[in-house]
Length: 152
Image (cartoon, rainbow, N blue to C red; front, side, top):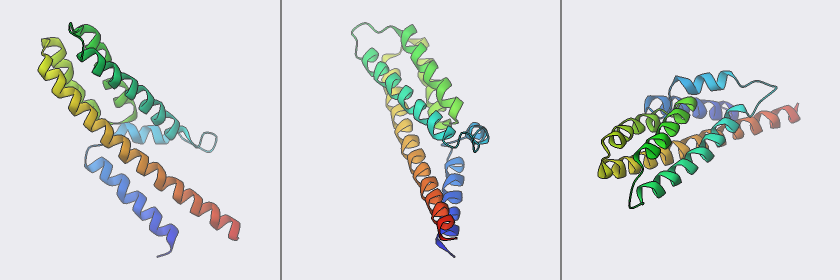
């Protein structure tokens, strides 16, 4: 098996595992379908915007939960925003971790919110790491394809 075929197989297997393990859902496939020659970095750009947004929201949530008097409505609005943006890129496990978080906001359950924040941060860091690996693999495959073109 040549290097390029090997890379393609690794990329395929890795991507499949992200779906099997619930990190990504069909929404991610839909994002990929919007990518074409005219916008080859579309998915990376959208996901990078998600990373920036998610990190801002997670910092906001951490700060809000550290306040003496917690504004649960504001907290819930941030969790709702994170839930929506994670859903829009197909980050299924982040999205699912936001559901109990929102319930704890409604109940004004500080301990539940703190535990949920840790869970959301954990799922976010996992999916970020997995997607960064996926993008690196795609870059390697593209570089390998471009190298093949130069050989010809």
